[in-house]
Length: 165
Image (cartoon, rainbow, N blue to C red; front, top):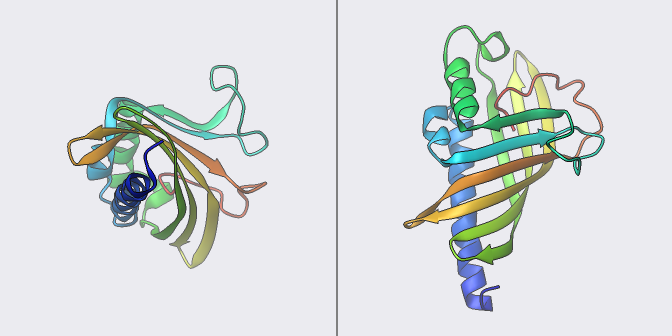
């Protein structure tokens, strides 16, 4: 791990990156958001009952590679995605950002989130933790792995997650 001053600076860089990611999602700039991912990136949301399951042998709520992430973003930005027409209004709070490991240009980090989604006079809340594998690219980062651990025992009444988390 880096020295304390270096660790604080790195955490600050990660926080800035995660805040920018949140802003892209909240403002529905999904094509720009997909550009944050590496070409071999994965994004997963494990089942609520056991987030430690092996992704090769378990059903996940979401398990996507970059082409699928891009496809879903394009669909949601189009006119045919009934789940987001009209689009949700979201605001996400990113907290407790921690760098958990570093190795060369690779940084593993976690952050808690609280997302409020307002759609059709209904407000839904999503809470949980992001687990990232980030790769340094110049002055910023790219997402190689994004795991979303929901701290909820059900998705009712929330229902549809689409791109929300």
